Length: 88
Image 1 (cartoon, rainbow, N blue to C red):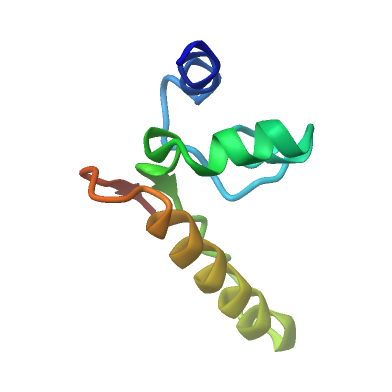
Image 2: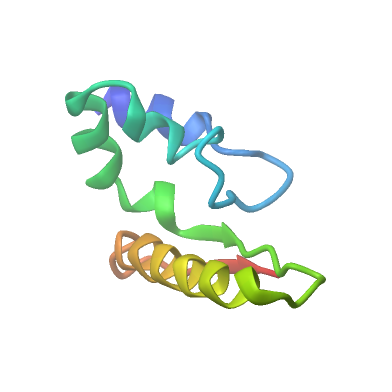
């Protein structure tokens, strides 16, 4: 499908995708319901992930890490059975 290929071309080329809402593939999910459905059903969009680790530990860090864990698990489940590329 052409739309899926365009979405894959939107991924960062020099690094793994991140959990930021301002970058593909998450950004693609925020445009229209159709784009969201297409992005969520395209495993190649979710087969790579860069996980940022915050340098400082404070009261908010634990809850942030829990949210990041949930987001990363959802992200990786969308990759289906594709090989994963994960960076920290």
